[in-house]
Length: 444
Ligand code: HEM
Ligand code: HEM
Ligand SMILES: [Fe+2]
Image (cartoon, rainbow, N blue to C red; front, top):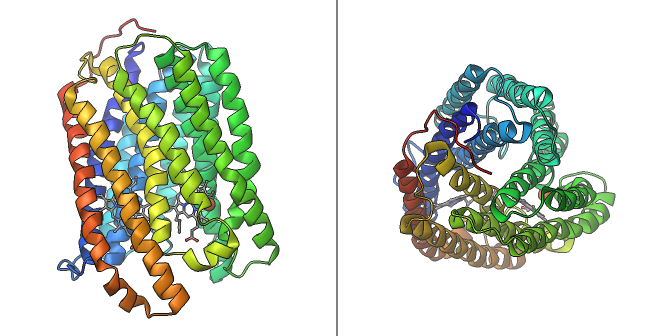
């Protein structure tokens, strides 16, 4: 750790681990419910479990991104974070709003819009909290000694994410208009500005872990960012096919949606080439493994499995089925969960002064969680394809089909257990690192 205030990120990462664990509990509740074992229904109905599972996911990823920024920005800007005490207030307020929302979901206090379930009054608090965060990292860059491409890409990703939260708050009672704006948040986050955050963190990790010159790593970052926006912005059209918007979206969404995997492929090639080119001997092999996993699995989960249902002719049948859940899991895991875990693995030895990153526990965590997630993806995929044929092609009733595919959820729960064993090992290893130290060390 080169700056004392970088240790703030530890508390964000610890919160991440807590929220992530809770997310998995709700995943299991849903997995068992799909198998017909819905004993908790009276207290936690499926809709509450689903909203909790997905919102906790978004919350722990955002907390991870914030922690990453509090670690990366001081190092890139070469100065301490401004007003460090406020960063703790910002974390506390974020957790308070998040926990209130999650409790609210269990009492039917929610908006009913997938991924944007947080009740409106709490949305305003989220906005204030995120503005405080943007002020702290933005101010640090502003007052810093240098502006790097890495910190700029990361910062603009975070700023744009904050701004793109606002379209989701536009009030309307028209179903189509509401859906239209919802996608500005959901799609333009994961297939637009979050890719900047991912690109910024990826570039920071590649510079640190491979020893390749900053100029080279950052030059390619620009090109990938260009591709992301070229395809991602109009790619929003792949959600406008059949929601009541004009027909021209079929063409726009079809073409630009199909181009989106190129940006993810670019990101994968970029990371692999940089890792091969750099001959740096480093003592954090697991951080590099997680970095490469991000690059490859985001291409498979987002690029390939996104492409699998992005064409209007296919989406007509697969929309809103378990095929979407198949893609959603591997895309979120590969692109955003892995990059957060990569940065945590990189930063922890520096924050705590302990070097347990390359332990067998962490190696087990890496392989077990990734294998488990790949099996989960297959399980969702098989269930999804069966669902599409029976429900959408043959026309069997929704609930009758759900009964038919119950068996696939046994495989899902087994795969999820393997995945969870990996995550428990990761968290255990996180705890083994111990608490942050206050001292500043010298390292590259
Ligand atoms: C890391 C990037 C990505 C993540 C995290 C992600 C995640 C998701 C999630 C969670 C959904 C469900 C959203 C909802 O119904 O509210 C979804 C839907 C969708 N995604 Fe992605 N995605 C990513 C990239 C892509 C890419 C690159 C493509 C195209 C090649 C794509 C194509 C689609 C399509 C067509 C749908 C709509 C499915 C439906 O109609 O039910 N996604 N994605
Ligand atoms: C213990 C592990 C997990 C289990 C058992 C699990 C199970 C489930 C189930 C059953 C659903 C609902 C599918 C439906 O609508 O019927 C779901 C939704 C979802 N889960 Fe998980 N999950 C787990 C972990 C994760 C992880 C680690 C991530 C992200 C990295 C994730 C991301 C999502 C997303 C994005 C959705 C919404 C998908 C959509 O919109 O179609 N889950 N999960
Ligand atoms: Fe999309």
